[in-house]
Length: 337
Picture 1: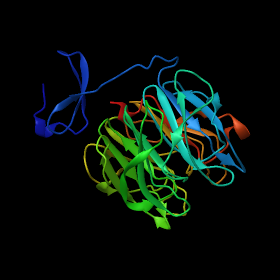
Picture 2: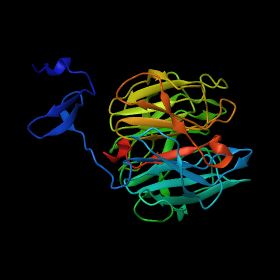
Picture 3: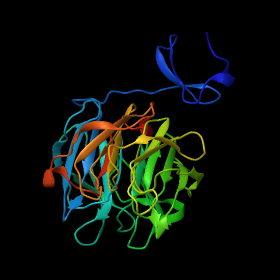
């Protein structure tokens, strides 16, 4: 028997026997979940870029998000760097700016998810910076915050299918650096937390298709300065600090369509900062980081179900994958619809 609309929980999922499609409840109407199967071996791929552990690395490695196991070598960035801003479409993964050894980078690289190999030059961000965040839908990639070394409020964007330099999008509500986190649906991007002298729990949102400044979404509750990942409904924010300088294992989530503060989801297998996040429509994976000892751990959670993270496998390239300030993207995240 069908529930009346007032009793249907936000984000509930059903199978529509007429359309033969999965749908989720938006609070006032059912919306189709747009599923897709990227034409690559192993399904949706998560890519981890760079990082450091004494040395700075140009590693690119990947996992198949649906299948637990260790990461595999994909290729190399055009520069050794850490703390890039990352995003992806169904076909391309992007790693922008970051810290080289020494100095800041404005170089944007791209890879093609379906073909292992080295990254190619895409263009440049509007300024050189590191510890920035990134998010995307299928068309646009956004890069936000970071440091130059001064904390930044700037938001850039690119058209993922067309190589070229990034263009001004707008500004965050406040400048922030050091691990601002991200989540996205096809229409909305969330830019959460970070550090700007002191920690900030501020969550901004933007409409990805429309240039403009960040607007208030709410506050993080249990994490700041970790890694973000999302499907089309939920944004997941994991690890980092709580409160700074204490490293946390906390995981929070937000419903992307609904303004408000984040809510506790569960815990990572260990507290760590400087980890990278990747996601499919069902799973989020978090790789690398510092406990403060640098680790190669990859954890995963099922996005629709609150609870603690489970072991997925290990990163495995430079220094046996034990590195921090890793960043990640996938070709199956929620921003792709």
